[in-house]
Image (cartoon, rainbow, N blue to C red):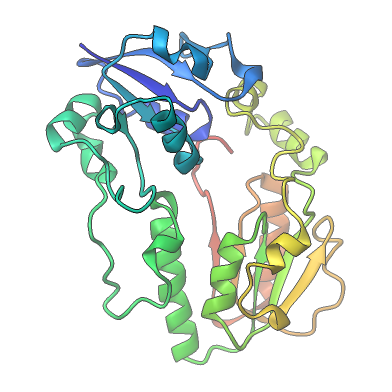
Length: 300
């Protein structure tokens, strides 16, 4: 049996876990930098701290976290050989793909998923890209590419209207919208304080999410609060186009006298997604689009 460790116990791990080939691999331990998770068990496997790595016998360590760059560097600093680290996305210069061969990957993961884990050269959109592929991770590759294709269609067809994002967080996706629609107003809706407790409680009451899910994935009422208006604006190429709508949606709308050609909804929870659709859909100009992030995502 191939002995593996997973570094990360949140949503990335939950999604990756179902693709492990347990006929050939044994998950011997979970590692997490979050001290609150140490000692707990997830799927029957104990979560341990980084300091315990040297005590664990393993063949490969799989990075299962959105903080792949930081964790990869952390493992290298701990003298873990690069050949024993399996990563899911581009990391840095010189580390551009999963650094294990197909034979290893097909042993660790079920065959049906192997190809989705191998980073291949998929840059072509049928035209030169307006946004470099390196600007988004493998988890957002399709989303970013879809945004670029929609922006091209909207701009080429001269679809009228402003653009908007509800659920801005730190502004990474908003910055792409801003860049692809350089001549349009960009309305940015967010509390900039994380999830609203009432919205999160509603999802729990309706059974859309459970306390176990929250604990396992490190979700709290303050999740996504590590942001600010200034942090977001600093990422914008065309700051003059940005209109900040800070506060609880839909109360934060105020007065807007124009329709929308493109809207991104990325608020995770049921009520703000519903309110977003209720507000934006009737105001969508003919030929416009609404993109909903995380549709069918297992956590929310």
